[in-house]
Image (cartoon, rainbow, N blue to C red):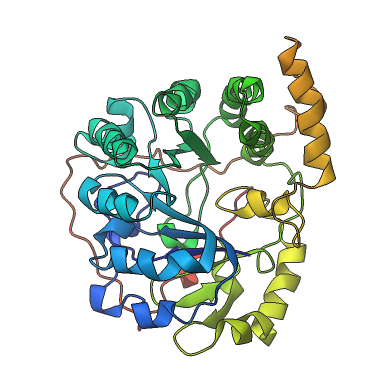
Length: 376
């Protein structure tokens, strides 16, 4: 099973598509080491995310605690706190680091509301590589404002010997907004095509399967059904900064337990978890991001082996790419079947703009307003 832990909603970026930084958590209320110690061993992947996880003063202790409990420990970060990340890599060089990068140069800084963010992220990745990091790279959220730079970001990742994790614009309860909708779905989906081709041409087998994941991302952008059904609550789950456990990070009605008062085993076997999995089986959100596709393409009892459909797709299209034949995208994606996006305000850059955050307390019910959010 994969698990993502949102360690905090505090963040020193000001992203246009995520407003958790406008609603930071209180450090004294955030999930503690003692609570995290309740997690068992045996996870396939643990992802430490946020907000911005490097704002946790105890992040290094959290990594020391959780590293033995999983095959793969990942930190999803904005990369602006290089010192903390470098110390972690020096101690645990196998920790996976993905630095959020949403454009080249000023484009990233505008989308993510960061001062000199592009240069600082590159400098951080350089330091982590020099420190011995073995699994480094960028993570990009495809949207109208950066889809023309997809290949540029991928190739930049390659200059560091790293990978590129991808997702598409979507809503989630932790974002505190429900208007993350594409302006031009076909344009974004078409922009992913050359990335799929380049991934298939790579010599790295993991990139061939990333090509399949990005094919699914094209369908998600267009608002079409998933390539493979979602397994939220079975194969992956999320923990929020207060220790509440959710089957996914999109639907707040899929809360299944509380790690501060329950054991992990009791949470997974609880009636709420059973109910959540039933809802997931009927869910029409068609999400394809943050752990959802990665777990879906592999059998639950053999996480290192892909399912047959993605394996067959990769085999056929890797051969096509190797001999220079085009990938028949229209065979896999119907570009005439495009969801109608609601009319939403244009996303604005928060770079350099004054803003006073509203603290989010544990005693509040923070996600109720997002129960009806959709991600088609």
